[in-house]
Length: 396
Image 1 (cartoon, one colour):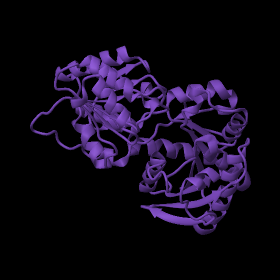
Image 2 (cartoon, one colour; image 1 turned 180 degrees about the vertical axis):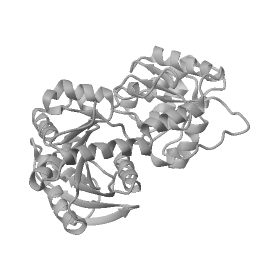
Image 3 (cartoon, rainbow, N blue to C red; image 1 turned 90 degrees about the vertical axis):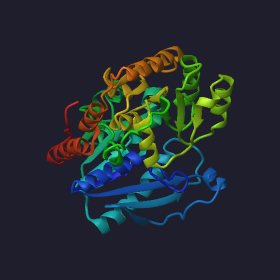
Image 4 (cartoon, helix red, strand yellow; image 1 turned 180 degrees about the horizontal axis):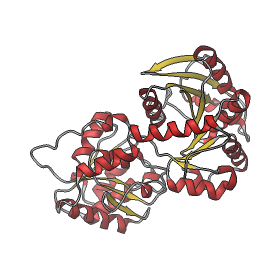
């Protein structure tokens, strides 16, 4: 099968790691024997231009990322902020990219847009122009936060109705889409984000000399991830002892380090910054627990990454993790509740000491639901249904 993936965002000059889960899914489909391409239009504004150097504009370029060829086009708009501006620019660039792609690579069998704004809109537009069926996967947290404006809602409805199959990455996002868009979103299946292939490799063996019990948070440092609440809860749960709290992710460390000093736990809180992927995997495998204290998530890739390494997780009921975790794999708490987070930290520490978590079973269950074989198989069935008839999808 020839699948053309159209993400709403992808890696670029100023965000080299962007769209990693789109890339992982594309690579997995290619590894299963499918021909896979990616269209990556990127629209820049005048503010971006003023902030520093930009890539060459209006030049179509193709580059290989392993077995997947990525087709790129950067464009610069000079229009003032107005409804539909970004959608027009994104789709105009995307149409040019598609024509170049199809001329070089052939007509795809399926267009797979990721996130309605604006990859899904472009996929629906190209489907109407070419007759190639479109599939839409929604990822955005904006639905749960009520951030969409009237014109964005119109575009989302257009993307939903223009797709032969509609997917959400979590049961919670599934329910939100049905609630907000009714029949336009139906039928709607749930297909989760795929586990990054490196996490399917066997985790490293535990170190022979046991160290401190480490709570690990892997997320960019930002208010919505609530790292400050995690530091407060950690300090309250373990005012003294050998437990440690480590942070991995991009962002400004000074605020977290200052709060740790104020809470009297600076010697046991480490802000490590961005780490190489293999280092992240190793630290997850050796951690006592991984913690995701976000206010909102649509999925929570960090949760399945931790489980794949046999590590239990504390996460908030924030839109995605509650569809992943069970009492056997971790603890769910309300978002923004420092007291509940403090209790969860103490509880998971005690449960781990009692040997309640089976690392091999956590890993087995994770791979069965989120591994390459499981997710690719689900997508293959959905693509086949989209090719076989109008607007069909898997069960929800």
